[in-house]
Image (cartoon, rainbow, N blue to C red; front, side, top):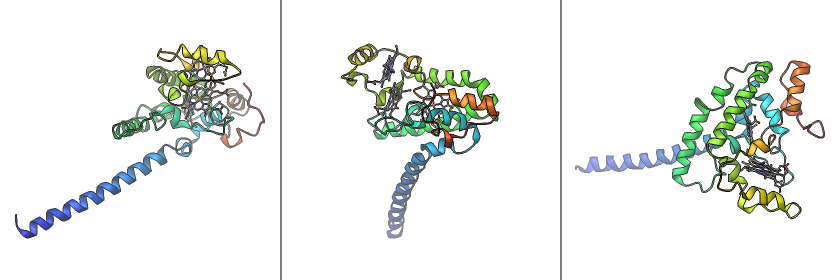
Length: 209
Ligand code: HEC
Ligand code: HEC
Ligand code: HEC
């Protein structure tokens, strides 16, 4: 190899490494941005109902002040630790898939009116529950370790969940409003014919169950 082409190879390598670092940083940034609740809910009104219902469910506001957002439950994500490099690549694919065809894009694409949402809800919910059942509620379990449940005042609760530790179960069969509580959103749609405004979901003191 000539002296000149050695330098050429050297600079190519340097540029390659720099570009690699920049691309990685950009990917991480976009993935984080696209995983925020704002990204999931902010693009079009077809998400207003489900967002309103999430705010009235059991995870948007909790006694401890912790919020579980859309991607915590709906995407393979950071709460499913440990997040190894391989798992991160898996996460990227899961997000790409959710963002393009089989996720909300497809679920929500044709929902232009709140009335259509009411009509289609059962089917949409079922698809989500089926997906969750398919991975045995791995996202719920990522935050709620059934083996470590402890409630001094209600020991029966932990005892009962022990039976589900290694078994297939359906968390939302019992915890119907864990993700979304639709009651008030539905009432608003029936009364006004319009999407409920998620910004107003917490104006009523207590969500109706
Ligand atoms: C990102 C973490 C996270 C995920 C994912 C998650 N949860 Fe939770 N969950 C919490 C936190 C935090 C609380 C509130 C704890 C507290 O403040 O006492 C909570 C509370 C609950 C409660 C008690 C609610 C109440 O008001 O009494 C139930 C039931 C529950 N979760 C079920 C589920 C189910 C079912 C899923 C899956 C569909 C799920 N969780 C997914 C973090 C999570
Ligand atoms: C604690 C877990 C949890 C969180 C957080 C959560 N969901 Fe859900 N989601 C569920 C579950 C469980 C279902 C299926 C049962 C139901 O419809 O409530 C569901 C159903 C859905 C559906 C299909 C049914 C419908 O109403 O159209 C969509 C779309 C959806 N969620 C979007 C979102 C968005 C957007 C967010 C954030 C604003 C979010 N979810 C936050 C658990 C969650
Ligand atoms: C057969 C019904 C049933 C199933 C299935 C079930 N739970 Fe529960 N769960 C309950 C009941 C009943 C309680 C106590 C009342 C309450 O807090 O809602 C409870 C309470 C909880 C709590 C609050 C604990 C506390 O001390 O306040 C969490 C968190 C929870 N369940 C998570 C889950 C998760 C995650 C799954 C799925 C892996 C699951 N549950 C499956 C019935 C069930």
